Length: 389
Image 1 (tube, rainbow, N blue to C red):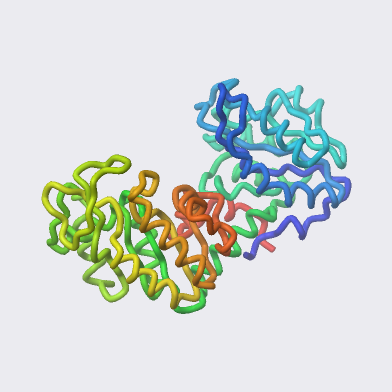
Image 2 (cartoon, helix red, strand yellow; image 1 turned 60 degrees about the vertical axis):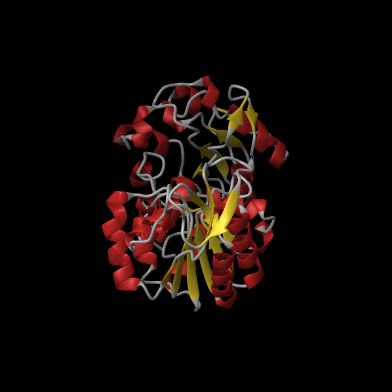
């Protein structure tokens, strides 16, 4: 990785600032956490720091409060949940900077969770004054929030200029290890599976991965832009007409590596349980909503041969059965392959979960946007800012 790890720091008696990702989904006006996965993901780093004699200042954003205090986006429920998980007290600060916070700073073995960083507009603006205030709360800094590593904010980049050492947490290290493993010198054959709605969201990823992998399989609505670029009918399927030239050029330059669906599950409208059929050529009054069985076989055959698999984005409208079959079938194929497999966060993660194969995937990323940027070959500011080994 080339950057300091928390395991390289001398934590004994030090106050450690850990940037965590507690951007959890809330219900009941911000009172109830509906998934504590991100809190649990930070526990190994927190426990490591406590075992090595540090006092912890934890900081996170939650939601998009747009620089204003919004009680429905308070981190209070996260402090309560973390306390339950760790079976020890977690103090909750009324703010993230200022005298009220300074008065509560933790001793070794204690934990203080700061209030939502984004209640201050200076956080997203990467304001130097605010960065300096955050840095004044600690002796050392650790970033364990991979999900925000692609954002140059005060807590992910700015404050690092004001601390002696800044290291990656255990979760951040794991993310970087797996993403580097599959992109920098992958075991071959290496394949990528890319889905989702828009080519425009994944164009940088396609252009970067096409140079790395041996096969690139495309599904989801983005496939129809490629199919239309070849002059084939796509009916009422979703398409990005302004990306047709780009898709055409990619097919011309890398057609030997790119696989497109050879059959489609189509329906006249997108709704659960809609009358549907499998076709090779999409009729004018129908839209493609999933890959068909022949495509599942074709893609599964490539997956079975692979030693490295990168997956980002579903193969169809998988949240509306029966248009989830393609995504679930490929998730099972990836799980059965025995390959090193890395799945991007967001929809791909939901797909892996709905197929019931989460435990058979080498690594499921906790950061959708950050993993996409990494796969696109873009340097993540939150990683670049860390201290070099």
